[in-house]
Image 1 (cartoon, rainbow, N blue to C red):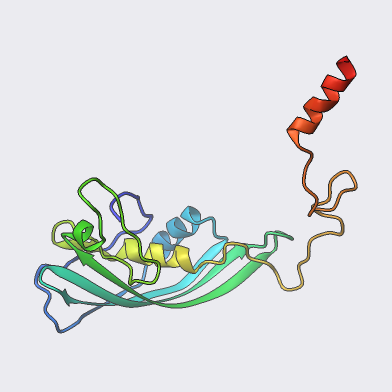
Image 2 (cartoon, rainbow, N blue to C red):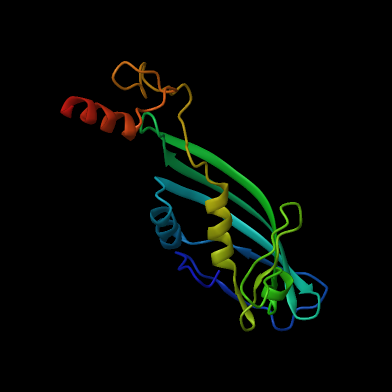
Length: 185
C-alpha cells in the first residue's frame, strides 16, 4: 500500500496492539469525500463509514477486520445517467514486517502463487497503518466497474462493423498482403 498515493489518509499507531481488538471508526469529512469522489471518478460519495478492528497477529504483525458502508453515485456506461450504488462490504487484511517471506517470494524475486490459498499479508513498514488507504482500496474494489442505469441497453447494431457480426473475426493482415501480391502479378 506504500506504492500508491491515496486521496484520504488516516494513520493509526499499531505498536501497542494486543490480542484484544482495538476498534476504530473512520468517517471522512466533506472535503475528504470530494477528494475521494474525484480520485475514483464518482459523481457523488456520501454516508461513508468504515469500522476497523485491529489486533496483534503472529509476533509482529497486525490483523485488520473491517466493514465499509457508503453510497456512491457513478455514471452509467450506456446512458451517462447517474447510477447510485449502496456499498456494504466486509474485509480482512493482514500486515507483517516480513511479508515477502510469508508471501512465498524467493530470494531471486520469483513468487509462488496458490490461487486457493489465503492472501499473503501486506508489508508493515514501521509502527503505523494507514486506515484511510485501506478505506480507499476497499471502496475501489467494491465499486461497479461498469455501472448501468435500470433498463439501459446498447443501441441496435452496436458493435457491428461493415455488415459483419461482432462475433466474426477481422480479416487477417496476411490476407490483405496476399491481395497486394496478386494485384502486382
